[in-house]
Image (tube, rainbow, N blue to C red; front, side, top):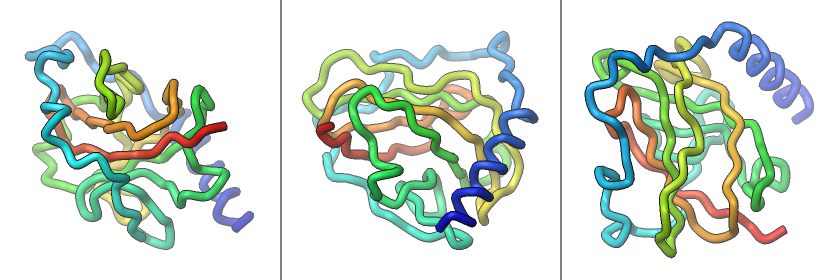
Length: 164
């Protein structure tokens, strides 16, 4: 476990030193709360865990996910910043632009931007693209994380934020 954690930490450090900001000057459509998927029609259960190249991830296998094994170390807790490595699989045409993640709580309310302007790195852990991130969510309960690449919805991941 320590070896995987050490390798992941080194990979994140290397990725952070090579990842630049995305070009926001060429935005065609701004991502806003008005054009987010409808909250009420979603199935609010935590996304599935899956394996990719020896890492456990949460998300949609073969589409998107981030390293997460539902352990005390990787779980979400209110306002606790954690490191997560996102992974994406898909057609190269879908990867035109930076990553933006908008989170919506199961009870509604105003969506919050969790990540914005992250440039995608190359292949990693079996995925076509990856990007390291630091994320936190403000309160306990179920959250939907809508991942946009170049202002197009790429996919959604449902996560649980535990009580402290």
